[in-house]
Image (spheres, rainbow, N blue to C red):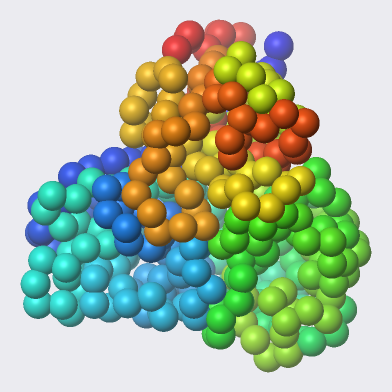
Length: 358
């Protein structure tokens, strides 16, 4: 049985959904003060919007997972942005557009929205563990999540992540100029990466991570512009698995409606997955709020600004998730997929209470 140190995952990760009403400012209740907010309109083709407490909030702080734009280059100043956080959530503010579109990214009437929220440790402080001192690092060793900002050197270097254990996933984005969203995933190893803004296969370049596996204190970057360009600024989101709360790994699809089962040790609240062995397949995000029962058929693609899809389906179970689509982007026969998942509740609590069935 999978015991945990986190009996209530919703104090570190939570999904919220709402319908827009064209009011501003709009306070969205999460249940805690979030440090990383990833939002998307569900029924409109707007870009994803990502804000964090380390880079700060405002109309020039957005990043967008489906495009390579510079920080602040995604028109949030016109169509709405996160202006700050509260002790229980965040505040969405209207952009400068005079019409209804001024609310578009976060709170326009007739639109539905989702935001995925993670807790780290506030605005952070300098971390000097690596050869590059971070500008700031905000780390929760309890939940295995950290946010770091740093300035690149253009040559091989290390960056402190603050987790105290080895991260299994790292997502790095250059913020002062355009660049892809590069992901390190333990299942791919230190000589490969994935680009979260693209539907491509794994990239076999060893330069982004300097062909070096992260340690319990630092991750490595090579002489590579999109993770370590000289004088460029970067943000890194790092994740370590916490038993009963989060899991990162891989699975092989079987092409059947009675698909592959992936054990996580908890009932998932959020799942990110992507085929790594072939090109052309999108990234997927499933969560436990947008439909709330099995089969879980509502998903969004982090690499596109498209509306919510319903073609691929999964079942969320008390101890993991099961693919129930016969092929496609999530369960092609013989294909390899990477995933990252966070818990709704552990399979078994720290006091031995089992999870409820879905």
